[in-house]
Length: 166
Image 1: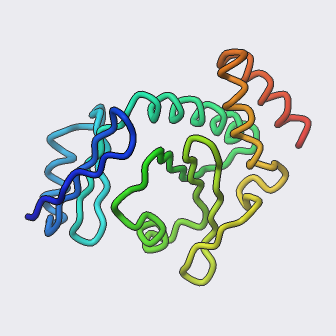
Image 2: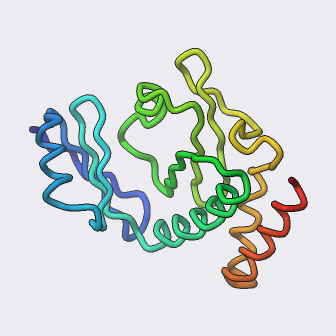
């Protein structure tokens, strides 16, 4: 197993990339750390990235999750979302393509990007197939609203907006 230099791009966030890690070692780490761990582990073709997210990452994660839950409840769907305030050292697009994930979203703290799997590769799209009637690129506007009006009011406004779109 080889250790690479930590990748630090966001204050408070720590990342380290390990090479030549077996799937069994990764599985053992997941078992040992349990489901309520604070670190994020991503495995891809023998590389393991361990990330300790900053509080800004966790806050954005929690709020975006709340908005997506509203969409999921209203439309009865499932979705994969990545929140990255810093860039991962692993090729997440290839990882998801290998898994056959038809659509995933990436939020960088400012913008929301939608990717759809087309013939084994991801293409950046303006609209979600999963949430076709909703212009999900408007979600960051609501996240910004939370800074001025609070999370509860933002969630209520978002739910009202979603229902108008349906």
